[in-house]
Length: 329
Image 1 (cartoon, one colour):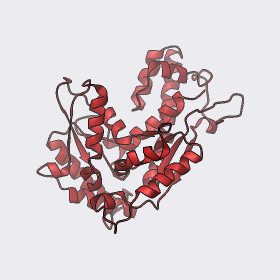
Image 2 (cartoon, rainbow, N blue to C red; image 1 turned 120 degrees about the horizontal axis):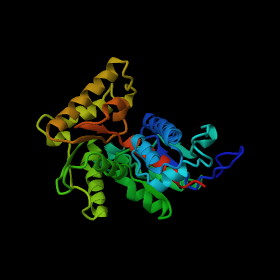
Image 3 (cartoon, helix red, strand yellow; image 1 turned 180 degrees about the horizontal axis):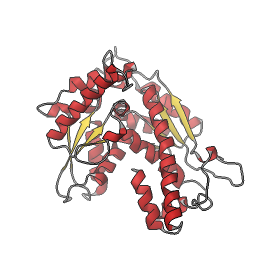
């Protein structure tokens, strides 16, 4: 899989396939996030290399971690700095973007609708979901990603069909892992309270609760325990408000995500109010557990501090870049 044909050749062993269309604007958003992630990474490492030298691995790693949520290691960053030449003098061009396959399969039935009413009269999203995954694998993807939190209720269905050789990047688990790194309590024995803004389908199917449990089990007790709170769990919370902002007549899925419009501002205000309710209940951070939410709660609202918004779309995008760049030759 050749990504450049000028004076050098880059071969990427990892090709990520995006199971998109859930919804289409969220698919567009993650592709944009992947592009920005690559640019941030390159510029940060290049500046560090120019300032400190390409052999200063500690400086390069610090620069990388300042712009990426992915778990880069010193050895990986050292390899990245060779670009394949010295990154200090390299020039970014089209051919250095990672290869990706995107299938915006917007006819996949609504995930929340089926999870809340899995009856014969409700369209089942699983057949279209696994067909999309299989089409991406047939086209050459060897790693899959779903930029839809609720769809991870069907992650095992996808894994069963594509087989063990195809990895599925699990967005909720990756988000929990990042949030634990970013907002770890002073003592590992202390629980970390995370707020969760998500669709009712995501909440009722326990997608993030299962993800937290999986992360805890893999860490062998090395991480703090996670306490997830949703608007249904707090006195001033209202899950109906979250659903209105996403699925309402003038909600984000209906196209009202432009913050220059009154409707977009209203949707952002609804979600911000629920974010504040979760923080008031003790949430150290709030997970934007629906890919529509970051379309109106912008990135500047994610940065730092108690109650910061954690954007799973960005976490997944950074992971896609990490997996692709670390595996290139």
